[in-house]
Amino acid sequence: MKKFDSFLAELESASVLELNELVKAIEEKFGVSAAAVAVQAGGSAGAPAVEEQSAYTVVLASAGEQKIAVMKIVKEALGLGLKDAKDLVDAAPSTLKDGMKKEEAAELKKKIEEAGGKIELK
Image (cartoon, rainbow, N blue to C red; front, side, top):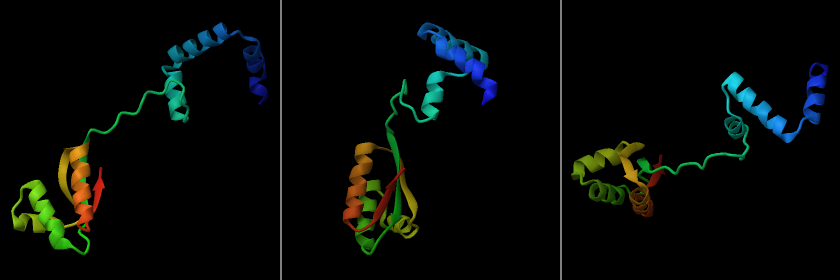
């Protein structure tokens, strides 16, 4: 691109300090952050650590073949009556519980999957 040849030639001859000043000027002028642009572009320079999810929604995707065993676990884990547990299992995919801690959600998932059901953590 001939349009930018002179600009690129000037950049090549600039010192690191001058390039740093250029970056700051561009950030101020256009209201952008070089670190944010690097993260959006897939770079890792200055990228903040990704926060781990702390609350999970447990969704029963399928009851599987052992529907009664899954109903018993849902009944115990959520403190429901038999009819309410049956309705939840029959309505799969259905949300079992919102805002569960990671450990509790993983434990419930393990129990239901051992009984033959399928769980999704969101």
